[in-house]
Amino acid sequence: MVINFTTENFQKEVLESSVPVLVEFWASWCGPCQRVAPILVDLDGDVTGKAKVGKLDVDEEYEIADEFGIMSIPTIIVFKNGKVHQSTIGVQSKETLKKLLEL
Image 1: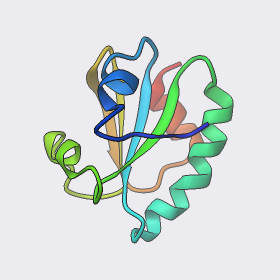
Image 2 (image 1 turned 45 degrees about the horizontal axis):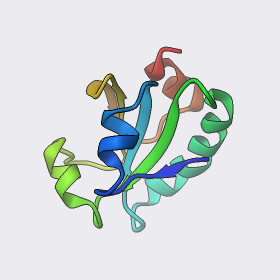
Image 3 (image 1 turned 45 degrees about the vertical axis):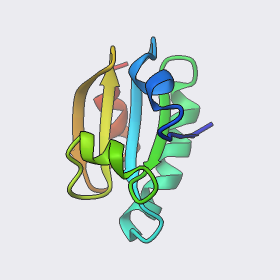
Image 4 (image 1 turned 120 degrees about the vertical axis):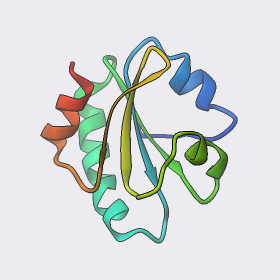
């Protein structure tokens, strides 16, 4: 299940996660972000138990987006051990996102 990250759960679900976490920074009005959504669902099915996949709405959770310097969306960041591991901007294939996770 693709997780919706918020200010309330970001620390626990992302920064304190024992597995890699892929976070898409997105907004409802962003066309390319809409194209990423089904890719994330598909990816999540492939990495269940090995990684987490989720998204964070930059309009609602702008403090977190600012903290990570998000200037363009969709921005996709992989966190490992509470730190930014890798990132990319724009629509990416499932295979590319899987490589970012390095599973």
